[in-house]
Length: 202
Image 1: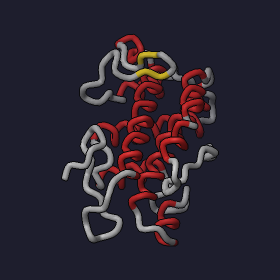
Image 2 (image 1 turned 180 degrees about the vertical axis):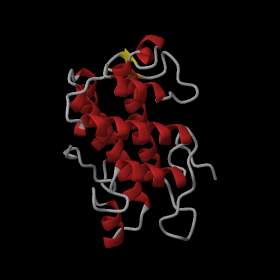
Image 3 (image 1 turned 90 degrees about the vertical axis):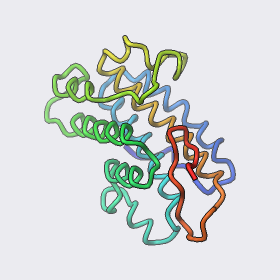
């Protein structure tokens, strides 16, 4: 899945850029086929992890090589999540969920036989996806759909969508915070960790 919704994290209108992604979130929610749905959701998360790391890293050839898709040391979704976790950008629940989302995406993308969200291997992985502490009905809506009702979380596709989009929106919110963050250390590229609401902890 190509990142056609490229975001300039150093651009003047970061929030405006992210507003343009809302139609793509809605597309993922409406997408009837399992493979494009899984690719879209994983791609959103990958995009926001990439943009967050690009903002933190010192600009230059070294960071570009590290973050290069596929060939870079931090070029995969899982490896970007690992770095984001140790930097304090995501908590352990999101880290585990991103690892599972990447595994689900890969199963859909590389299976020799067509899979659906009702396939046993996918169902078992979706069951392992865990809503963050405090996630409850009435808290998170996309296109007017309540993402965390008990009924949605019982259904594999809906559970995958709800948790994937919650992570994507959360990362987008945290990136806005990063872009507005003012340096408090003399060492360029170092940021304090964020709490669950995207606030700097010190």
